[in-house]
Amino acid sequence: MDIEQIIMNIIIYSGDARSYMYEALGKAREGKYDEIDELIGKANNAIGEAHNIQTSMLQKEAEGEALKVSILFVHAQDQLMTTISEKNLITEMIEMTKSINALSNK
Image 1 (cartoon, helix red, strand yellow):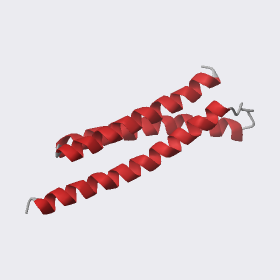
Image 2 (image 1 turned 180 degrees about the vertical axis):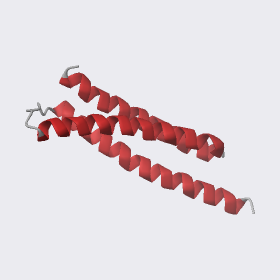
Image 3 (image 1 turned 90 degrees about the horizontal axis):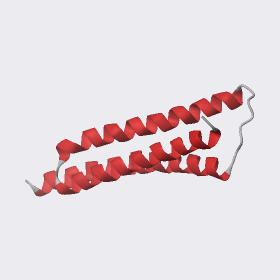
Image 4 (image 1 turned 180 degrees about the horizontal axis):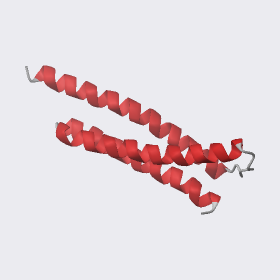
């Protein structure tokens, strides 16, 4: 697989994870809490795949293999980092939504 395809996989997995997290947030707003864990699990798996690719590239570079750093690679790294940050924030938002709904149902 060429480097561009490897980099695109990081972007694709990051995008999938972000989509799953926003879908989970939507389920929280709808009060469909039973569907959230599966979506977060899918997001975690996608982030894990992207992270594994990233780690593999870092290991190759550490072993002395020269990697082509391109704008596409920088974009992939940015997408992964942003997705992880958004996942953390959305997880907190879901918990806040659950708390608010629990209080309003008392």
